[in-house]
Image (cartoon, rainbow, N blue to C red; front, side, top):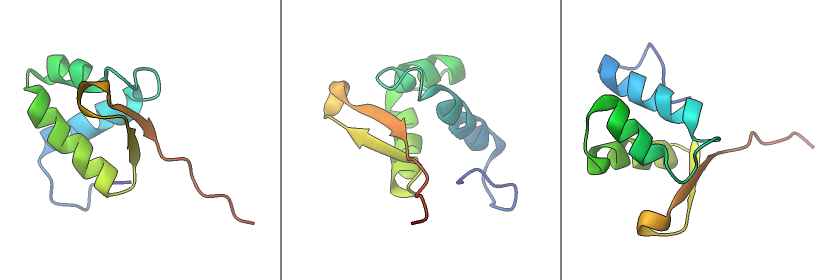
Length: 79
């Protein structure tokens, strides 16, 4: 998981990522809007956090621009 106390990351970034992880399943198409309001930040700023989470394999993005939806990456099952 990206949120790790051993990683040197501002506390606010950890809080934002935690909020996203806790809300993305219920609000896959609105998580950016919700986080933006919760943390009084622009959608673009929240999108940077989400993009980092997608790059690290925590989230999957589908669709494009404002129709983009996110979901948690399902853990790989051992065969």
